[in-house]
Image (cartoon, rainbow, N blue to C red; front, side):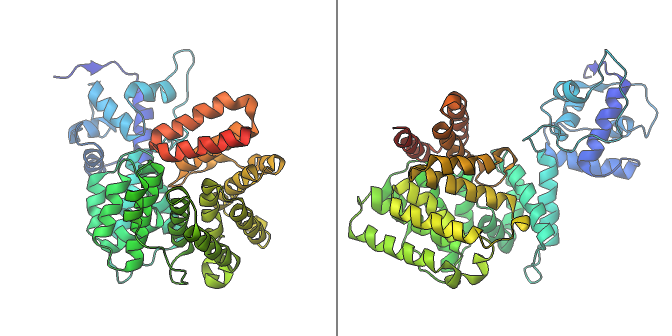
Length: 426
């Protein structure tokens, strides 16, 4: 029999409130305990909790017994903590003074940490509701809910395979998830097989182009040879209103850098550059619907133009982004989009030698509030820029840069950003 842990009653009540908050309902009946048991088993089948223990834990049966360390750890991990000891250090009873028992526990107890059980259930609920391809049309609220759940799961750094198998049962859902939330930060881990799964059922040429472009982008970031990148990338994406400007710009951006670094410029590079300049200037005509959302083509291309060191292209894209932003209603702007645009324009200003303007953008960025599928990649850009703009804090900025590099394993991107930083500091 497992050894019982000596635990204060107030800690048990607090932990029970935390579990109720995490599962999304008050546990007040035997049926509730049955549902919770399934949730706990699904969350981590290695550490099961019996139905009788759940009933005791929530006071549905009289008992004077305690609980094992394994049971308490299982509850704490379900609430987003490493162990019961970790949970108790943050939310448990303090010996020096009496503490009122809260009616509920915070859903996200640690800044930047997202309980995988909560995120997983959010995604599963979304899949269940949208599994019919004939009626598939998610609302904005559903889209935001799926986004929060997926980003939270992505941030764990590993793919929940049972959930992914469920996604793969519905091709329309798999395609939607990969196209709307491509695992850009995670191509060195689960992202590549995830996109390869997408490509196995991608029948439309545009889907195939998009999947290959995401793979190629990850390969560039990981410093894979250009010959392998180009082979994966395939041909250049045509400029068409039916192909999203984000996918178009990403494909042509990789090609731009390939022609600059692999072919060392030349006629093909100049031909593509002219095409990009022309398309950027008339993006509002090519993509009238998507252009109203944001300047996708211009801000994606800005990144690749900066990496290629093409100041003419950087200046042109920056001017087009600025022109777009002046047409937008300030009070209805999206924080994520605004952060991305500020970050891109900050780097545009750095490579163009206007550090005062770069600092203006830097002051507007609240990067600690930014969560997306490419937060870690953008973190490398952000902390790289701070090394230029805030030399007194360079030690901290380098450390933050190295953390993002370590998490992504994007040594190719890291090498290129370091080179840009060195050039700007010279």
